Image (cartoon, rainbow, N blue to C red; front, side, top):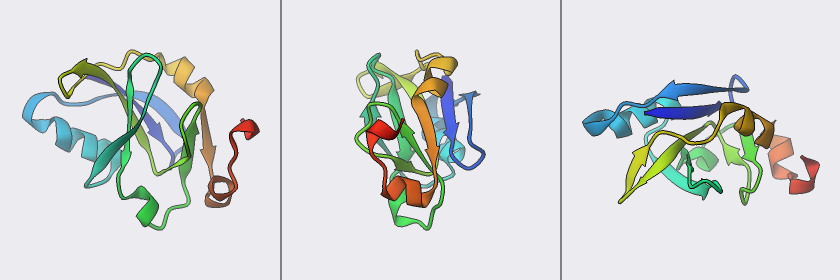
Length: 118
């Protein structure tokens, strides 16, 4: 599946492939470099932003904010499409659109973040 990786450590945003079927969850874990995921934000086109569920519990200095989200997220993010019935699909978002909506933040910027700073 086509996904968009928001890599807060390298501060790069790129298309990546997520394996389908039995290896899908493991593939998401590998892209996010984590053991648990959550989907805290849905974009207007119903694409879903996945992040490390334990990101805020880890010592982390790398954050990102995506316009419209309720807060910045610790670590990286992965955007996938919603195929319905709890299944993921190809991301519908365009790479340039996501690049224009994401701001990378340090720990101090994330703590003091307000949306108007974008």
